[in-house]
Image 1 (cartoon, rainbow, N blue to C red):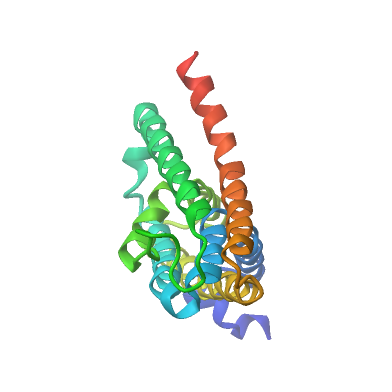
Image 2 (cartoon, rainbow, N blue to C red; image 1 turned 180 degrees about the vertical axis):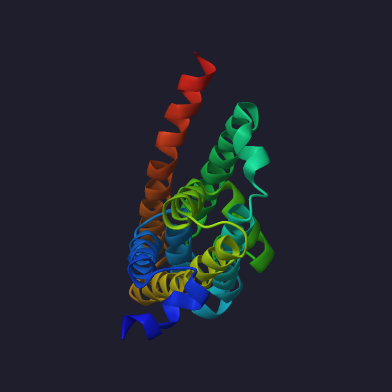
Length: 219
């Protein structure tokens, strides 16, 4: 029966590996991280409808990142210690700025003055400076691809296809949960407290990167 399963697609990936990739994607996709924290905050502040471009930017931008990394086009970045350090610094500064913006949001009808939901392109581009996205993408490609040539391309395509489904599901779940919570936080002060908590979670995800940057700069 297993031999007839779709995960054996042209012999590129075994059924057991397919299941392992699926479990890895679900666990990493649904656990807290910069994307999910920002989606929850956006859902609470703006609602799911206005958060939709942000949601789709994550759902399609991350799998696109996996394809690029899987095909080896990101190897230039990973081969340079200087570029890696630069990416860490840029990503940390951007995440700190996002945490500040999240903490400022306090109105269910539209957020703080001057703020707005993340766009599709902004969310897709954010994946390239999202530390968790890099961890998942590099980890998945390193652990679950072993072929060469056409087999490698199919393996990467399977992982990316799974990521589309999982990223969409997790993004929608976090945004919807944020929106549901937002309905209970009609008072600007209550929503401010919620968003400050989300901002603190985002800051917590930045701390390990800041420690790494500090260590590398003081070697």
